[in-house]
Length: 312
Image (cartoon, rainbow, N blue to C red; front, side, top):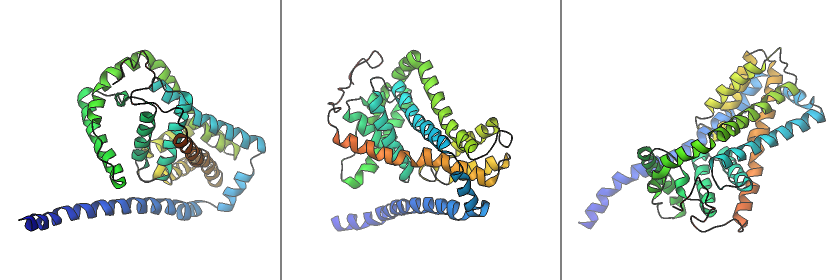
């Protein structure tokens, strides 16, 4: 009987396992195909690479320095958003968790999910409660169950046991949301708006510094194309929208009136400062988190605030 049940169970599980394996293989291949097609086929066909490089080299040292400083400020704006939405979180902690998760999201297929799991691990190591995740009670339970399944799948290759209790932790989402929004709605709104506008400012400055004038592409047109590209980046085809965002920005800004070579140069500079730059920064912050023990706290050991009064 044992042999029969074991043999009959194999056909049911083997196809599922094969599908999972194929999914893990195909996702990176699709991402590589998209990125390769954009940078090695679309871009050379769209404009002259030598003209793009000439536009980049035409920037003065002052323009380059300004762009780098604005890009660094853009990175920092995300930290203030995290602090405003996570009571008890400090600016240095927000910097570590934001840059580390961003680096993962920009380099790994399905990096968004991995980044969330990494952020959860960091918050837990600093003593923050899982019930800081906020939502209505019914939806919170379903999100908790789904997140638990995703987390279990991610750590299964590491031979770790499945996660438990996430749906219970998220059950407090509604009460915490109402409390947080009543107290900090203005701060959250302002910091989020500043963060998005700072990212757009990097793009706008990059375009202006390589020669795309206001008469060719107005800031309103640039903002509209930027918003559309941000919407596309929400579809996880490639890590951080690599390739997809470039095509959307280059084609949209060129259609608005910008010279192709200059537009491509501005977009590539923008992506270098907002997509590439966070990767080494995130690697450094991740190493810091792994080695720094002074911030570690026991479970639920984070400082209590009026917005997070209890320890569960």
